[in-house]
Amino acid sequence: MRNLWALTVREWKAFWYSPVAYGVGGFFLLMQGWVFWLLMAVLNDPRVDPSWRMSQFFFGGTLFYWLSILMLAPLLTMRAFSEEKRTGTIEVLLSAPVTDAQVVVAKFLGAWSSFGALWGLTGFYFLLLRTYTRLDWGPILTGYLATILLGGLFISIGILASSLTRNQVVAAVMGFALMMVLFSVGFLDVFISDPQSSKLVSYYSVLEHVRQAAKGIVDTRPLVFYASGIGTVLFLTVRILATPRWRA
Image (tube, rainbow, N blue to C red; front, side, top):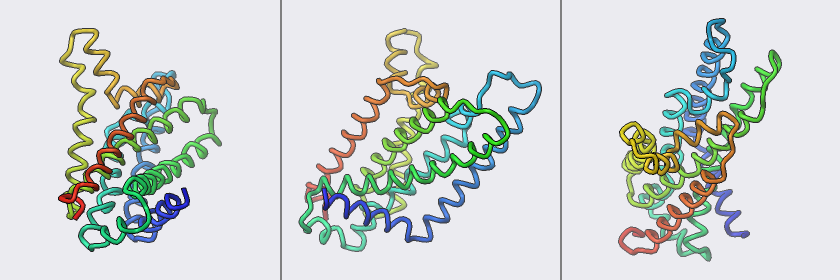
């Protein structure tokens, strides 16, 4: 556990001590702030249905939400292993008294915690809104929960992509492509008429997961989906590192 903690702190510092972190983080927060302001302007229109909630649009209700996650996750993970391989420090790291699994999990936790920290800062927008109106915190908290879980799955995919190449740009593009495949599953429901097949698509649809969570609905099935998905992808990453072809 001590080794895992030390490695995780190493990954955290590697990100936050870099000027890239503040560039990416600043742009992310500015975009989310602009989207939040835009949504407030729309929802304050008297013609808008009063039953609509901010959480329904801020979490998964706009294209900006999905773009921010699909862009943020690859940027956070593209350096994970590709930079280590490029500089040759991967051999030093893996020859240290730590296991491959500890290295992979530490890189995942470092990137995931950074992802969570950036999204956590957007909570100030809701605190500011709370000074002007009453808020139902249930859907807001479940929206954040779904976002963090979705981010965990995408971060694990980005870590996997980074373990396959020495080039950061290739790792980012590869991770983005894999995430887009998972993101696109939800659109298959439009072409399916069979109820059973539709239920299966809904189970794998990250769009549906976030949409339901933004309404305050908590379902254990998505929790199992994300936990098993993250575990499976990280396991594959560990196996890839153990393969001499990809380790070098």
